[in-house]
Image 1 (cartoon, one colour):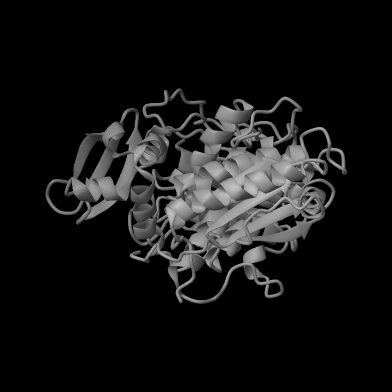
Image 2: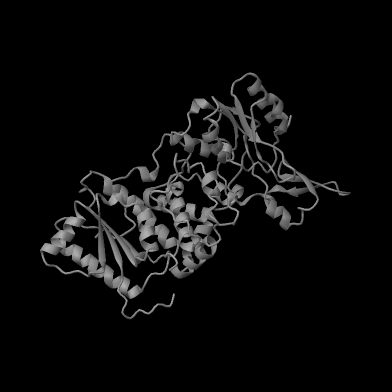
Amino acid sequence: MNLTEKMRQEAAQILESKEADLVIGWGGGEYYWQSPPLFLEDAAGAAELAFSPFIVNNLAKYLLEELESHEKAALFVKGCDTRGINRLLQDHRIQREAVLLIGVPCAGLADREKLKAAGYDAGLLQVERQGDSFILTLEGEEGAREVPAGEFLLDKCLECRYPNPLVYDRLLGEEVQKPRERDPMARVREVQKKPVDEKYAYWQEKLSRCIRCYACRNVCPACNCRECIFDQNAPRWVGKANQLSEKQNYNIIRSFHIAGRCIDCGECQRACPMDIPLMEINRKIIQDLTELYGEYEAGIDPTDVPPLGTYRAEDPAGFSER
Amino acid sequence: MSVAKEGFEPLIVAFCCNWCSYAGADLAGTGRMPYPANVRIVRVPCSSRVNPSFVIRAFQRGADGVIVAGCHPGDCHYHSGNFFTRRRLSVLRRLLEYMGIEPERFQVRWISGSEGAKFAQVMTDLTADIRALGPNRKLRDAL
């Protein structure tokens, strides 16, 4: 039985037995690269669930809204998604008893942009994972082609440290082994090396694209305040004018608000319609916190204390203490 | 960014904690220790009251430099506020530098209520540093 069948069976059984009154999972889309979130209250809908190498959505954030109208929600989670679950648990935004977590080990997801760049996008009907390969189902005579999966993985999957769920009630399939193939901090160090005015110009070019759709905030499991400061009118922390300074303000403060709490899932960057490398900002903060106050990874243990929520008398300072 | 440096008077916003640094400023005043009038003091209950948004907003509205001054570690009126300030603003300072803001433009210093002379000295040095850097155009609202 493949993972899609297992997902469907699990979801149908949960809804039939009324173990949970909602199942959140991934569905199939019109195109091979789509995997929209699916919200099921009825077992009959379970047949729409689909596992594919494009199940990139972190579904954790949907819990905040859905648990207002449901007793208990079952949720499919990958390794990176479970750090979001831990984030919400640690921030007391969900109760562990109110969620049923179905873990899905993940050996890495496919990047449509990389497939496109290799000329595979047009006429591609389906992508399936098989061991270390992706099986591409193509339109027309060729039928199918096997390509090495490693060449078409999302960058964030190459940098992944947690391919298996950290917290779950049930696990579908076998745990996977997946070594980290790339250093996630490489880009941060590159940007950091630039002279100060070049850094400003670099970020000016990136941030001037921001249309302030707030997709990065909406998708982020760490951005879970009941009322977000960017939505407040009084005081108005960020102006409405369409100008660079407000875009800089928004992006600096957004990343600062998740300082020490960012779970490094990369969803903000994926959701960004303007291709702003937001993880380069988030990871800069992770790097500095590690350098100054010790190794810390958010969303691993919901009972620990994030670095900006505590202090030590002998802490070093990032400024002159003379 | 070609603004003449001649006749440039920097605008510096100083967030001073009520219990130490504001008292230090007061002592500088009563002790007749001069420091540049470029410094505009905003009194806050504790250095940890300084929301990073205050710093960004100051730059948006035309500050050439921002300084946050609080009690020395261990001397906080509220026991631990400045320990949180130290962590938070250390990260903010590095982040602003990463975003391309000269680190000299955003300072954090510990100044106690008895350090009037230090207050005057820190503000004099900061004003000289910012004057040398020239007017800030980064993060600023369009005029």
